[in-house]
Length: 227
Length: 385
Image (cartoon, one colour):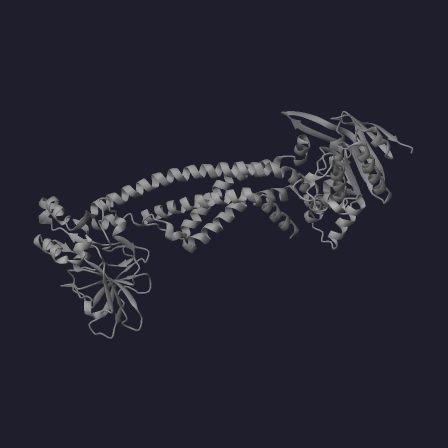
């Protein structure tokens, strides 16, 4: 099923001026794919990712995820979708610095309405997988960039989402940590997750199955990469 | 449940802000309650002065020495035919039920007439079949009689007064030149007002009651024919104690109320502004810290409405805490620390104070909520990143 977007447009008002930052964007992402959205700064790639992740709203077009038309969903259903279907990884990690690693990781569970058993075990399992188990009670502000990004990934996986949306996940990392994060993302793809990465780093983009290139709010190229 | 835990944890993490704001709320409540309490008391007592000032009545209390040697004072009062208007507290147990009565002299019924809820005030010139009483509250009806074991003591209710009404009592009145009506008016705390030791009226006599307590002060009525010599007489009586005209006390009372309202009004205004700025400022600080948190909460499953509710509840918590602390404190000793005379504090006072603070808080909260509702949390967050 996956993600199907047709004729997506996004208009924003800045300084009393209306501007289209996305226009006529058609995107299809199949389940289990690892796709890179590339383009220059301000091209609209993050906005596209936010629309995919239902944290932002499109102005025009149609968007369906796993056959569900997002326009027909109520706010609470969309919130549930954000909680259970998507896992987000951000360039600035998007972590709550005054909270501990463990508190950050279990946050999606606490915010959601689903009651699950063994939450603690699940959190520790994720931490173990990402090599941050010993940091569980550490405050996030004391972590290195790589540790923070691994914490963000552990949080993104907490609700076992189908889609991982990563906005410049390696933007604040050195090359060693970049490689580690990319390896983790590839491993996640191997276990069936669909990964969408926004990046302007071509090395990162080349690790993906496919590239969607955005220029001035429009898709200009869709390139399949042969590994 | 999880979300509540999350919210509580968040409150605890920002406890510094919340303690500061809660303390501010308690201070504003302290001022507000005394202010509203005073305004209520002023409203409740606005007719008090009128009840007596038409007569030339003085509040008098002897100096300690003369209190024990009253003959000299009495001689002086007798010399000018000044009428003493004593009041006393009486208790009796006529029907196996203890009654508390406020005893008035005959003349006092002529110079004073409080607001009645029903019936009429006791008229010293009227012939009553039984001892006339004014009952407090709705336990008795006008015209109702009740007998006692003593055949001389049969009472008939002729008027009803509110138990919330202020009545004249000869406490330590007239103690200074600035004596206020609040020294001679007290809230009705007895079951009845009854004539005591009267010449013409059917009344209760000293020997018929279980106990009798004379109030330490006196009210003196200067006969009209002495009006020309008033100044001279007052000067002479002043040698034996403090004396103040009730009219003057009424003026002092009004002036002190006015002063109280001006001073407290200024303090209240200043603290309201401080609270407004405090709530606004601290909300902004918390909001700045919370902006990222709300974005993350939104990203991971909160709707915008939930973000707004969460922020609203976080903002309103000092108000709720402050009010709870204040009400608890009030009923555990704070009321005794209010030194302002005649404060009328009841449920309305608390409700009015709470409503004022709710309005004050919402002046800052509502625009914040509207802003939060309109803004694109994610875009704003991205801009900051």
